[in-house]
Image (cartoon, rainbow, N blue to C red; front, top):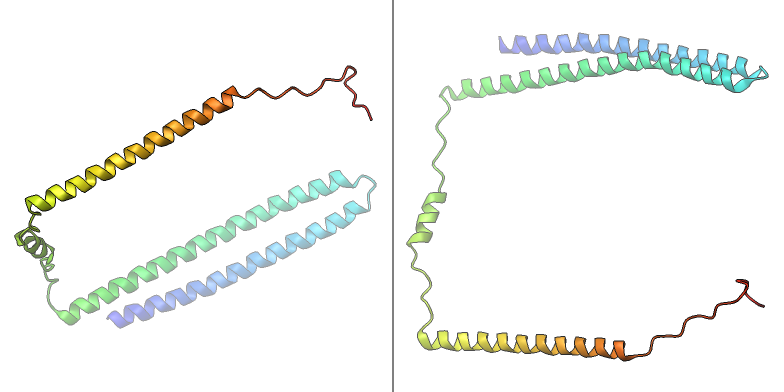
Length: 187
């Protein structure tokens, strides 16, 4: 029965594909006819004295005619996409049925993940022993000295910036550029 359904579906897709090919060919012929008609009308326009308005009208007419063909092409493509999606869904359903028939057992409950056991093992591990009191005091002293050194560097930088800004302020401002009386540069 399952093989019959697949063959029937394949045959229907083949017939639909043949119809689609015929429709595509008809749309292609329509497009070619519109293009040929447009070329003839454009040639007739070029023989007139006032060419631009005539060419504009021919262009607009061509766009309107091609829009109808384009809408039909889009509808055809959408139908083909739907057919392919339905065929894919059918194939997936068939494979699932075959797999279930092969196993002939209901879907088993998912296995319990091992992550909780790993977490429990991590929790059960004793924490890293804390450093002894002398080690902690030495580490704290190092950290404190590093902090104080960094604070001294920051303070020295601030002082350098203040000094540099004061020196800039103490300098005489530059003289302005000379202004010419007529506004025209002299040679």
